[in-house]
Length: 126
Image (cartoon, rainbow, N blue to C red):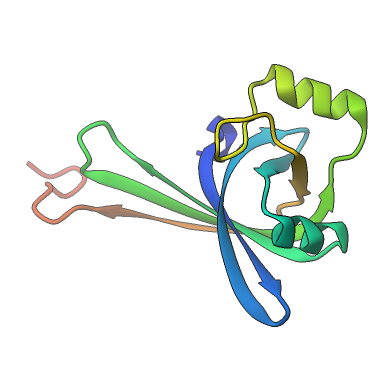
């Protein structure tokens, strides 16, 4: 699911308080790259903070859903070649613009679950 990229949420601790902001992300070179225009999250990433990424996917009928949560160390993407490659891959900020900042999240902890909407048939059932 994460290999497809898409919308998600970045979670960080800012001054000991939780902050969760929208992002778009790509799987790139073994890490998750998150586009962010949020200065607080960017500030946390600049200081190699532990960040979290949360993402969801739903099937076309809206019956099945995956939720994935990734936690790991972060760092800013600063080299021009990588930023150019990310732009060619179409990474956009949540506002649909070229991101002002890109954050690399090294996935250290990966958890997820699959759930079914109420009234949906059980897997393998009729």
